[in-house]
Amino acid sequence: EVQLVESGGGLIHPGGSLRLSCVVSGFTVSSSYMSWVRQAPGKGLEWVSALYADGSTYYADSVKGRFTISRDNSKNTLYLQMNSLRAEDTAAFYCAISSSWTGIFDYWGQGTLVTVSS
Amino acid sequence: DIVVTQSPDSLAVSLGERATINCKSSQSVLYSSNNKNYLAWYQQRPGEPPKLLISWASTRESGVPDRFSGSGSGTDFTLTISSLQAEDVAVYHCQQYYTTPPWTFGQGTKVEIK
Image (cartoon, rainbow over all chains, first blue to last red; front, side, top):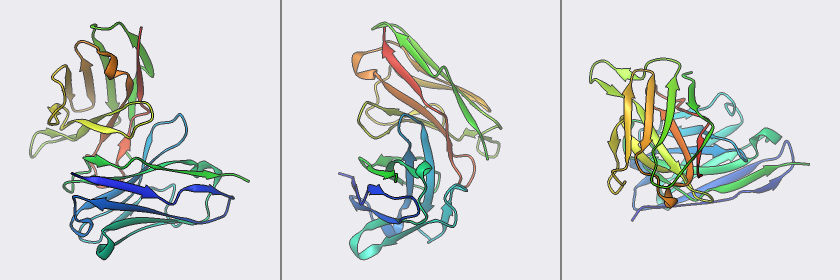
């Protein structure tokens, strides 16, 4: 069974930093295509970042230069380091697996909520 | 970036009746070399994460009831629920994956019981 469990969300002041984690079971992170997708309260889904099996990384323009995606193969865990957080980053953050390079999100975690507010 | 727009934003349908959701992309997501449309549909029930329903515009995932069907090509797509059930109350999202990232979603369509 595939499981993705996110953690690391919380309340943070504007300009602050947070690191989200996504522990994966049932898939090997190092050979998978992983993404972070967020959903602001009452809004639609927004793809944020992807990490391909070959190590290639991709970012939405809205987070480029502020967020960094990475993985720890020994822990089978995906991360999202978020710096210079803004109020508009407030959202539930989901990690998701694509079973191929296509960008179809086959499996999703339950999400972790990030609230950026003073 | 490809912009994806859904309509309507919400709809209320009686149990057993048909629900139809439209999705339009700002450019074609049909890849001519393999004749595949790079479009997916997801269901998000209240308080839950999204769940993949349909990929390649019309291929249902394993375990998805056959009352769900996807159609369309190029820039215009439709998700149809042929006979709405109570458990189908959810927000439905379409997504294009034609490009290398960024991948983009529609704004979502909320389906409720009338």
